[in-house]
Image 1 (cartoon, rainbow, N blue to C red):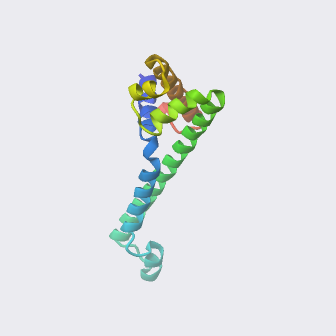
Image 2 (image 1 turned 180 degrees about the vertical axis):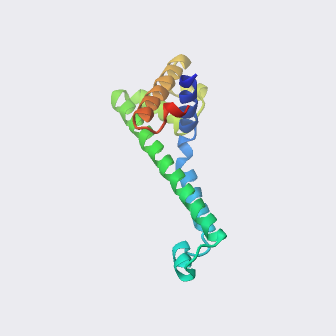
Image 3 (image 1 turned 135 degrees about the horizontal axis):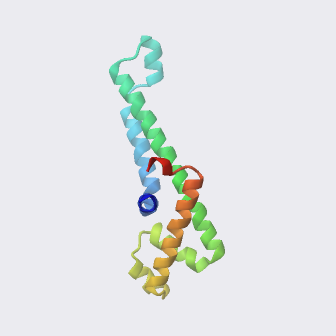
Length: 145
C-alpha cells in the first residue's frame, strides 16, 4: 500500500534527522578523500578520460546528489519543527526531543509529564505533516512507489 511506503520513507528520514550533520560531513569527507587529484584538470591535461577518473567523477556526482537530498529533508523537517513550535511550544519541544535528540517516548513522557499516547499522536501528526509536504515538494514521488 502506498500510504505505508510513504510513512516508512518519512519515518526513516525523521529517525536519522538528529544525525544529518554528521552524515553530510561524512559524505563530504568521503568525497574529498576519494579525490586524490583534481578530476577536471586531469581530464584537461590528458585530453582523455581514464576509467579511474570516470568512476571518481560518478562517485562525486552521486555523493553530491545524496548531500543535496539530505539538506532538502533537513530544511523540510526544520520547517515542520518551526510550525509545531509556533503552534505549541510544548509540543515542539517534545517533538525535538523525540526526533532530533533521539530520546525514547517513555523518557520524554517522564521528563515533560506527558501521557504516552499524547506523544504518540503528536509524532504521528508530525510524520503526516512531513509526508504531505515531501509529496508536495516532489521529494517523494508516489508514481514510483
